[in-house]
Image (tube, rainbow, N blue to C red; front, side):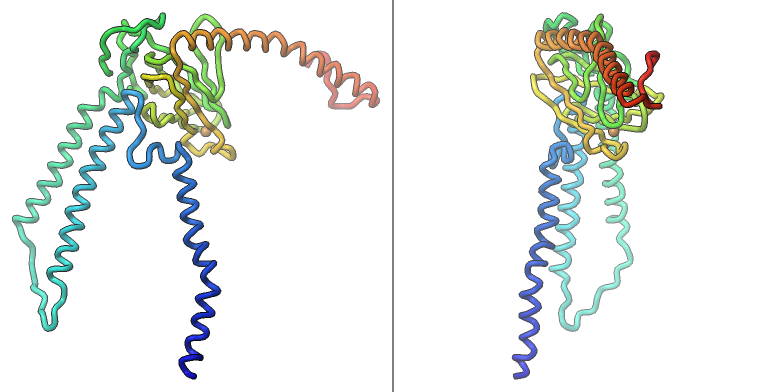
Length: 317
Ligand SMILES: [Cu+2]
C-alpha cells in the first residue's frame, strides 16, 4: 500500500510533464535549426565561405587558428580525462601534495608563446593580400589579362595602375543598400549589385543615416558604413554566381530585412545590364514629372469638388 501511494503521484507527474519536456527539447532544437537555415547567419557552418581572393586568405587564417585550437583542446581534455581515470580515488588513498614542476611550467609557457608567435607571423604574411586589391582578371573592355598577382580595407590602395577596376559607391540607407556605378551614364541599383566576373571591384562604403555594415561573407571582410566617412573594401569574383549578404550592424526596426546581393555575370552581360539600367532610369526620370502632374491635377480637382482643403497641392509644390 505504501509503495502504491508513493509511486502513483510520481507516474502522474511524469505523464503530465512529458509534453512539456518534449517542448523544452524541441523548441531549442527548432530554433537552432532555423539559425542554421539562415545562410548568411552561419556564413559556412564550421569555416567561412570564401570566393574572393581576400575572403580565401581570411578563411585560411580562420581555419589555421581553429585547427591549432582544436588540437590543443583535444590534448588538454585527453590528459584531464586520463588523469581522472588513472588517479581516481581508491579506498584509503592519501592525495600526494605536489608543489609545482618548474620544467613542466616553463615548457607549456614557452610552447604557448611559440604558437602565438607562429600565428602572428603567418597573419602578417597574409595581411597585405587581404588589404590590397588584386588586379582584375579582365581589362576595361572585358578581355582576359595574363597573370594574377593577388594583392584589400579602410586604407586600401588602388589596384595596380595598369589593371582595370570597377569602383562602386555603396550607400547604406534604412533599410536598403544603394549602389552607384561609374561610367558615362547615371546608373544605380538597390539591394542587388551586378558585377563582371574577373573584375576587381573596389567599394567606397558610406551611409545616409545610421551605422550599417556591408557584408557578403563569401566575398571578403565586413565593413562598417558610417555617415560622413568612406570606408573601403574590395572583392573579385571568379565565376558567374549570386552571393548573398545582410546588413551586419543593428541599424533599426527593419535591420533584418536589409539584404544585399552580388550577382556576378560575364562582362558582356554586365554591359547589357548597365545600358538597360541606364535606359530604365532615364525613362523613369522622364515619366516621373508627368505622373506627378497627373496626381497633383487629380488632387486639385478633388479639393475643388470638396470645397477646397488646407493641405491641398498648390502649383508651386
Ligand atoms: Cu543596416
